[in-house]
Length: 436
Image 1: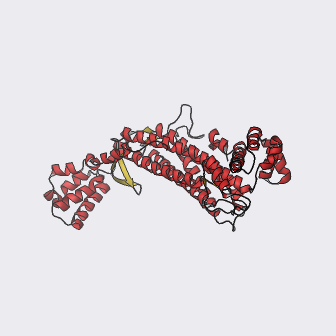
Image 2 (image 1 turned 60 degrees about the vertical axis):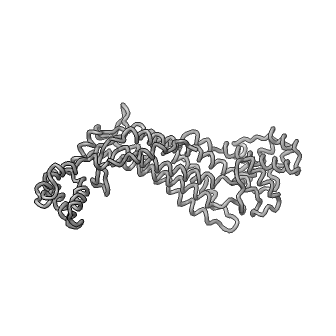
Image 3 (image 1 turned 135 degrees about the vertical axis):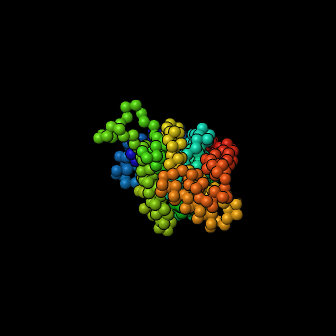
């Protein structure tokens, strides 16, 4: 995991320190459950809670010898506790501790990400209302289509991120399970009530049917939700890149004083942040493939998933955290060139009104096929001769006989295409920006 693309809060969640802290929380929760059932003395549990500690460097030294990270951890913790350490790990297998603790880490990471999404939704919503009347050209297949507003673009993005927030919440719920069920999930050396009590203390639900591990479909769903969220931001960032092209020039990334865009070309102002986010989104979704591969483990468990998860879980959550925070800043400080938007609206000589003209001819009694042919011929002529669409329409004898000149001009007004867009903003006004 590159610290370049990870903030301290997320790095802390995936640190060795926090991993061992979570292992210890699970071990203590199990001891408390055994004590509640009368299997071990309450005084011993209190002593464990009071004296339990660990040393990250010492654990590494022990692991180098024993070649087992959890055993190394237990040996180091036992050194701090003393006699009462015999109650640690009672009836457990390593994955009881590791998988349950991993759920706690994944939940912590997801909470940061959900908060990030909430902030992004709020900024997108704010920008949508700010630019609700800023008319620009809508594009399909990269070509001019019909007028939209920049506010509508931000509104679409806000709703998409709100859907991602729902997916992330569902993924958080999917992984918020623990398992204290022993070597193959049969509770052979355990009382099932220990699992129930320990998980309750940890704020988790017991996995209803585990093997030696928690099944990895849950973890794949978690990565899936991260990947989709990253793909959404990539789509938004890509649109900003396209709109910043010299030939379009409708929006522009913030460019700081003293910033330089090229070592060779002093004039360059490149969309480097949007490009970076698109690249990181590719890396993020590549981790989903590995998570899907982790589902098909042998029987009650093999260890092929372990090395993979050491990479993909910290890296995927860190990447998305970085992507979301960075894109939020980009949107908040985006430079909008409204004059260029107005200029670009005229580039296709008002051909954006072709559908409306065609429907007007249908209303005058022509068949759709006849109307389509007449308007297409006029549109192609306007484009090829670089002339105003209205002038070409008025020159056509059939069209002119059916639609008066003044009515043709009204058909070409951009405002008509946006007359119903208020309904989108009414819906957006109700969209929650809360993370929960």
